[in-house]
Length: 459
Image (cartoon, rainbow, N blue to C red; front, side, top):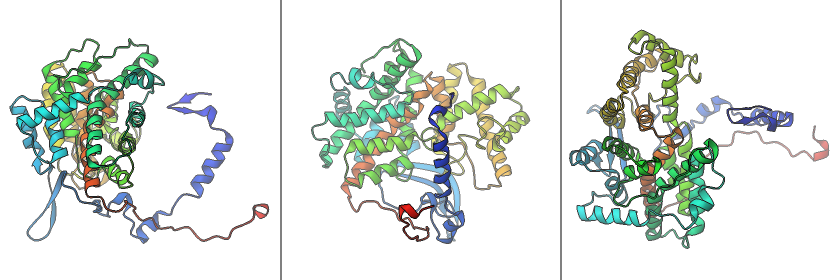
């Protein structure tokens, strides 16, 4: 039978259909019970604020401020890494024409900005760890390539466990060593995983470039990914900026919370990171930027005049009314669980995206993105009766950047992971250093108590 959007209908038998109905019928909870028992669904209260479940010194997100009279009001979004405003961090390395991801990783891990000598030493350590075990590419990555790079990445991470003689040792010294190795290896695992997929599934030429020790993480990603290993300085600097902006985002985002939850059980680093990768893969988390690009491709096909505000507005309304694109009722890249007036990462990104679009001859596409960013908040407010601010989030522009860099869409979310492994590592170390109880939220049972019925008397 046909295979539609990954569903092999030959495997869905009438028995599965019946069992699915049974599963749904007996697992659906009355939504009113969530209100009755004041359940904070998604660990968020009725106002949408996150429930306090831990403490961190790694990063802070500010989206509202309290006035002298105690009233809480929305404000322009702010993001801090180890107490330093992300705008200042970016301005620092951009002004000096340096790549910033490595020193940002140092800051997240060790709580301070590195000196020149400390940064050189740190880069030397990362370079030292930037090589895979003998035959790992041949025996692990090139065998059974997957169309989903996040699954490939998770499988590679779990396999590295077998190559680590101290895999289960969760001393801070050993975990730091493991984290540094994974930070160094994520670009290789991601790019090589894609090369294997492109070769075996798309019949493209197979080439494996070794990373170059003198290059930054961003430069090496482009160097290893492209057959001729060539890239422009602007391309590398914008990819580096993307890594910095994706490296960390508070302890409450889904994948970082996963890092804390799984770390609290006392398990090994590889299992923790694989779990976090599984979280990041989801379209409600790290997979959102792909949806933005796909949405704009559909928009460009259906909107004749990209400069016509009314025509673009009509398309956006159609999206919200489930009449366009994937009919999910969403304008992807707009809105955020925490930010309302603005996402500082998107604000930083926007100016650099404009420069790259001009270099690539895609300035008209950039103007379309800007127009949607301008129109969408009011349209969402009108259609959804939502008067909490809605603004573009980082996914709105990151997918556009990756498409301009000619990165394959299969690598969009792994690029996120290459950046976020720095934040996950910092949070894993913080959880272990301040080790408390295993994280175990409470769930209230609302099922009726039933008598046991012997098998021969069941109907």
